[in-house]
Image (cartoon, rainbow, N blue to C red; front, side):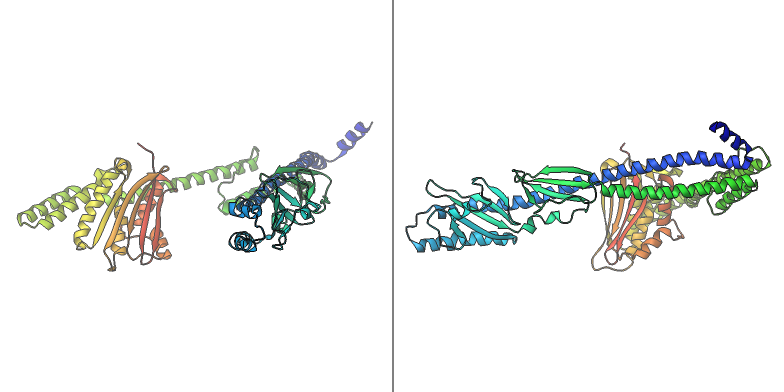
Length: 546
């Protein structure tokens, strides 16, 4: 009967109300499921993070405590294993107070003072003995007094003892059949356990000794946030203590509950939005036009990646799909313009190279060289040959790639010319890995950088000779070519402008753009410069061993 009544009521509803109700029910079920799932997942994530944090904190705290305890153990061994010090408690002085005075002055007092100086947290170093030294110093007591201590258990091994917020390191000295002596180092309680004070508020910490007695804190803390905890423990390496962490689940539950509350708010808001949208779309068909306009507005805001598409076959669907096709066509045109820009860059470079007529240039240079040789002008002939070699390697027969060896031949020819033109006022040093000489790269990338170094870096006379260093090496899949000079350097603004400013010739910016276009944006130029110190230009290219 109930089902029939519901069906009857549902059938009597208007179509708009049926659409609204069905959409709300369909939307409500997955949203509620997602809300519960988000709470469960967030709680598990919070617990994992808290446990991971606590485990890391536990490891760190144990390491700190081990370091401190090991330090005091070493200080204790430093005293106890000192043979001259141990003999003081074994000697038979026979009322020779002068000998006692000498041993205390030369051995015992300096050793104790040095130990306290090495660690300011040591409060006192005391000795308990049954020998002849009783009453000699305030820090030497009868052995019976030690045995009456409430914390003394008669164990002769080295012991760490915590009693009444005081930490003691007890160790027996080397003795004989007649004399038995102990050393007790008193250490500040707060200094030993200082690393435990800054832990997270949801972590409760305690330390037990070998007898499972709580030695920290004075009274065992109780978790006040929640009864549910995760217990972690780890033993120290340098004594018999065990560190216990109790991680409360309350903080994770609180954080997860906060996320659930936010999720619940989003669920309610989503339901309201869903209700409003369904009501609007079911009331007026014109809302489809508003939806299309919103997408067109996003396109107007340069969001050209948005997809505009409709599966409707009516006039509105055809209009939507028409706009979508137009948008895809616009994206294609933009891509074509971008590719055309890349081709333009390459064309500009090729046009620059093609401006020189190779045959005319070689014939002219050969004629000039012949005239120079005829007139015995050796320097002019050398410059002409260097210039011919430079242009031959620069033109590279129209090819886009050269070997590193050919690129270096080009730059050496260029530097030969510059060396003569500048009256030999600079020196060049080459450091090139021989295994890289046959590796192929895009050509004509070193010359603009070297030209800039000579033209601007060496513009002012320096105190010493100008130095230019060119190095080529490869590591970790990167080929690096460096051009370093000891010139006047550049300011950060000048460095930035050098890579972005337009140049009247084939400048550094063009080299950087060519590399990025050819190899990708990961590669290119890096400038490192300091005024009055010099400039380094690093060319980074991909490298795959031959």
